[in-house]
Image (tube, rainbow, N blue to C red; front, side, top):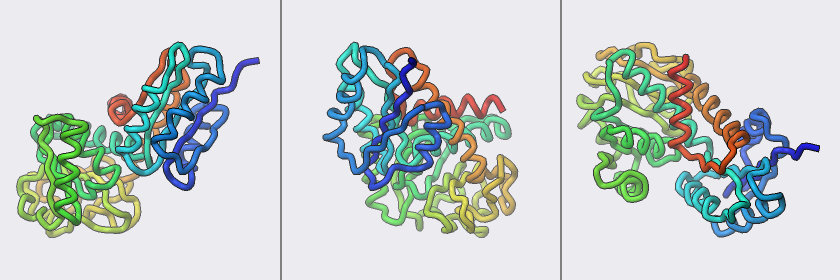
Length: 300
């Protein structure tokens, strides 16, 4: 009798995300076992219990890391990798609050829009990330900076944004990266230089107004992950898919939450399937999510 595919799903939160459970089952995993309120110090024990209870090799076992904090998730993913005792192994995939795959979907759609309409990449583009201290905004900023963009992490508190940008340089990007922090009210000071707006603020809060769109003379793309009205960017519909943004004086393209969500869904599904089919251990994070998101977008 064939062994079932078992996914051990870890979260730092009180409850595991039903979204992630559904995704795992739909991707072909036979059993999904939740572990809630997990701390980083507990990960090694869970991983080793999982690997030693089955014969050497991957043996149809995986670890999924959820939660809310994108940085703790990376820490836990590293612990998973360091906890292996070859030939007893396991694969792991982190996607806290769906932030890794959502940010990947956003960046892949922005890159595709830049290429198709403006014949440009993210390199040297001025990118403003609203809600930049949140999970999706932070990861989107890291991915944009990794692609060579000049990124500004924005939020209500400037010092928090500056602190996060330094953390990203120290832990993910390196000293050559162009990423900084600023408060939301500084947007008007740089509005005529901004090429890309990534909106990942709280649901139902407009971050870029009609008046500001009229001042954004260089704006090329605006993307928003918020599907709850009003949109984070004035005039941007949740279903908008790389169509010209009403109110934009520069002919910028708008990308709505549902267009991004479709790419996010595909990226997460493909990563879960990759875990199930890989013949060697894989440890999947936001870079892997972006790779598969780009593949999906380019195939459309």
